[in-house]
Length: 437
Ligand SMILES: Cc1ncc(C[n+]2csc(CCOP(=O)(O)OP(=O)(O)O)c2C)c(N)n1
Ligand SMILES: [Mg+2]
Image 1 (cartoon, protein in one colour):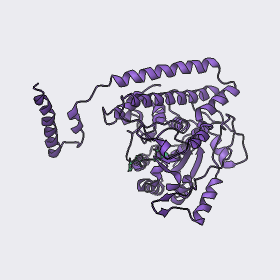
Image 2 (cartoon, helix red, strand yellow; image 1 turned 30 degrees about the vertical axis):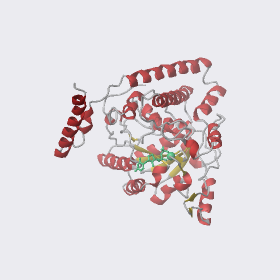
Image 3 (cartoon, helix red, strand yellow; image 1 turned 45 degrees about the vertical axis):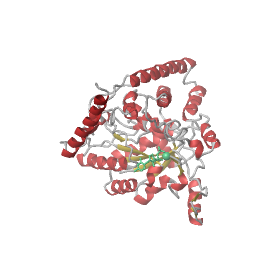
Image 4 (cartoon, rainbow, N blue to C red; image 1 turned 135 degrees about the vertical axis):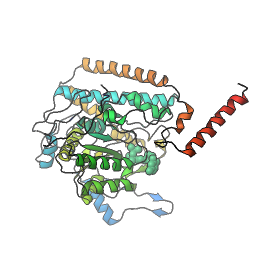
């Protein structure tokens, strides 16, 4: 993995970009397209569980049940089954359009996607362990969401701009951000940890849904510049309930902004399930705003790559925004401060384990004889090396100067902040005095 230090500005270009030529060069492992497969279907709609809040039941009405049922018949774009089989064309024109973007993918590129997912999962496991050892204050695991993130991340071009939430470690990897840089904020030693313009990867955003607006504004600017870069905003199913996200959808639609809204529907917003977020499948929201929405199997890296390439490509051509709902599952806790056993059943997780994104690509690589034991052993060794490096770098991160807390609040300083800094400095000094130092 490489990390570029050069700023990646939006690229001006007269014509549209040819399909399938996207993908960052970080490990140069994706790209290319040819005619080919179409997606299969799956019956995964919004949950319709009846839940009670206080004395008031939130039972869906007949109409909302009908809408949800319609959603449950929704086709999921899937190009690789959980058993690792490539999905053959079924005559669905729209699916063929997505599948085109990965039909020519080479064994080398498939191994690259696998490597990305394995190393990202290993990094994530290491971070979770570091939090348990007291080295990080908090960690938000991406476990289970590797395919959605690596597929979409590898669909982005170097000059595209990415606006993540706080869980997009796999996308950061694809953008060439050194994973150890993701950990400073979670250790509490800095406010971000990387220069967003070095990799066109914005800082992690904790204020739920706000980055959808930032991305839309940025995309409107890209269009005004006459550039053909794409912008992608990541957010979760819970964020879809935020006003910011609806506002972003509308601005993006009416200004025809080149932005892709990538919603990872991991079924949970901390302890709130999908049925508290929406009465229709999330991807259908796009229709009301006037742009296309697609539900993709978020545990299928190929489908995630294909659909994101498709969406970015049409954005580059000036066809405006698209919503991708990556249907996936948060296998772990919301963060290390959360205990999911308090609100969800183990059998739900077990059902999703069978659809594991890494396992399905491994099955495919093995059955198609695209990878041998040597490849998997080498990757295991590379994972170990990455884990060790992450541990060493995190433990060596210096504590910041406590007064640095007051920096960067205002661009040009502020009298009140100066006063607070002085008070805090005096408070700190009082400890030394008390100890007679
Ligand atoms: C505006 C705002 N409201 C509430 C929160 C607290 N909060 C942090 S994460 C979260 C749930 C987000 O769920 P989702 O969008 O599905 O993303 P996920 O964590 O599942 O990836 C909430 C409510 C916040 N950070 N910002
Ligand atoms: Mg969620």
